[in-house]
Length: 303
Image (cartoon, rainbow, N blue to C red):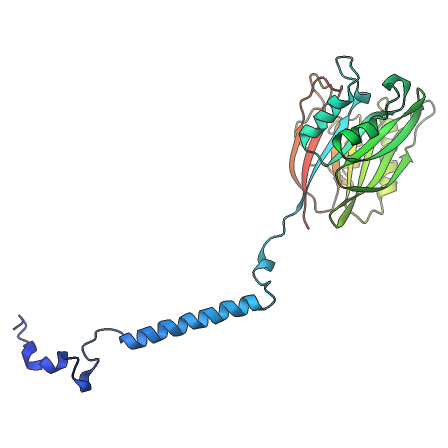
């Protein structure tokens, strides 16, 4: 007998599973058959729900995944016609500097094409060949039996190269804006390369205005890169930044002179409202290959 006075023997039939009238009366809590039934029912309902989710085109889950942006690595580099600070004309050395940056779009300034002083080499074509990149050349001057100007290299598709002459005063060196269309996957952007006057802010401001006029009706994403011969906070940069975003603004990114960089005069800008997202800005430390250090900018371009 239990301590509370209850005698199990007197109620043995309650505890007997053989008693038909009390078949489940000895169970405490949920009845086993009901529990098993409900578990099976819920499992089947969940299975049908997941099946329906995938059968609706199989896209319900995939559509919720974020789409990775296109990542663009851009370089601007005044190559000083491949004449290094050691006095050597070395095109492969310039190519190797560019290769190590991993850039897929490159703006070049001070590019010689078949001049006597550069041993009749087409520097733009030679760099394109060494780097396995497409090339566009924008001549600014006829010089030393050949031409001198700016160039664009890219791993992507390149089309519609157009060289625009920028305004200049009498006796000043002709400067140009090289316009190209670069196609990344199924999307295109406009890429501009330039080299502003080095003698006068007035000349540079005239060139800024000409670019503003040329690009005022742009309806596609655009990038502008080059040697602007003007520093951060200058009137030239302030005017450009009315239409273009400087992803390195507020950062110290000196590019000249290459041996001991003290001032930034090389820039990569993108058009306001194009959706580009800056990832990084970096000056490549290369003291010998040219008198300028290259500037590298990485941007994400959301799809």
